[in-house]
Amino acid sequence: MTTAQASPAVRVGDMAERSFGPLTVTDIVRYAGASGDFNPLHHDDAAAKAAGFPGVFSIGMFQAALVGTFATDWLGAETVRRFTTRFKEQVWPGDTLTVAGSVTSVRPGVEGIAVEVDLACTRDGGGVAISGRAEFLLPNP
Amino acid sequence: MAPDAPTPVTFEVPVERGKIREFATATLSENPAYRTADPVIPPTFLTTAGFFWQSAESKAQARHGLDPRRTLHAEQEYVFHGPPPRAGQTLTATSRITDRYEKEGRRGGRLTFVTVVMEFRDEHGTLVAEQRSTAVETAHAPKENDR
Image 1 (cartoon, one colour):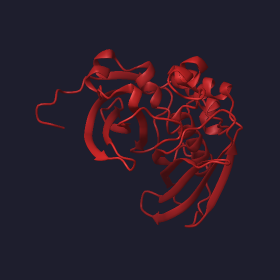
Image 2 (cartoon, chains in turn brown, red; image 1 turned 60 degrees about the horizontal axis):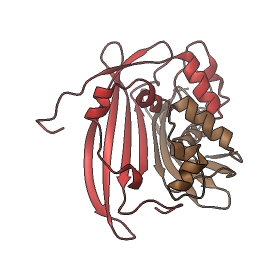
Image 3 (cartoon, chains in turn red, blue; image 1 turned 45 degrees about the vertical axis):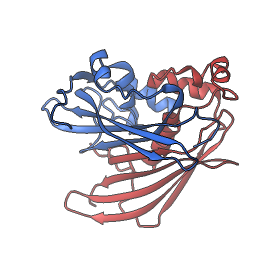
Image 4 (cartoon, chains in turn yellow, cyan; image 1 turned 180 degrees about the vertical axis):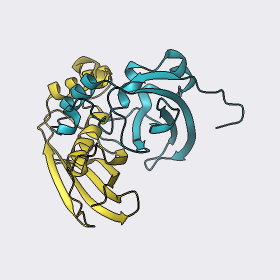
């Protein structure tokens, strides 16, 4: 059941980072299809401009999912117990995103090791697009 | 929930292996855990339930009524009460508004926040996952990176 993706020796202050992109409109459209979110602001340039935007922009839940990809590649797909994202800035085609995480809490327990991480997704050359937190329950060694 | 709130209608959410693989690929994950015969779902996967499985009746119950031209996605949270659900399971879901509040925006104007919670139960009726989506209606139409 539980694959050994995460080291049991996670410590407070451990950090990891990964970049995604530059993101293309194709990346956004592929996510639209996978998720089912076909709001035209995210793939129809004319619709985005008519709504007052300079063009199409990414789906917030796409970059949230990229933060999820980063977090579960780091600490495990089966061990995640909570994943929270707060949307700060829009993301645009051409953006490269850097997702970084740091371990803020490690609590050993009977059911496993509860690990909490802070997450941030930053647009290269821009601001924080998403701030987040996640909790994992890692298996006891 | 308010005492007079109606009982939320339920809808079924079959968790499918191919959909998980498609979602993992679209979210740029190469994690082998999403490509086994019975993979768990990625952490934000249950967003697909609202687009592909939620009934019109359930959507009507959880309609926040905010003006779509002035409304932004503020926050999204997933809680898993154990390992995330996996392919082959059929979940039973409900959706309801749990919170609605107003506050003054930093740049003036009233902000209205609404939180919609989707609950997912397994075949035994055990609550296994929750999705909390918070939207915010701004006083003016959102502009580029204006939050």
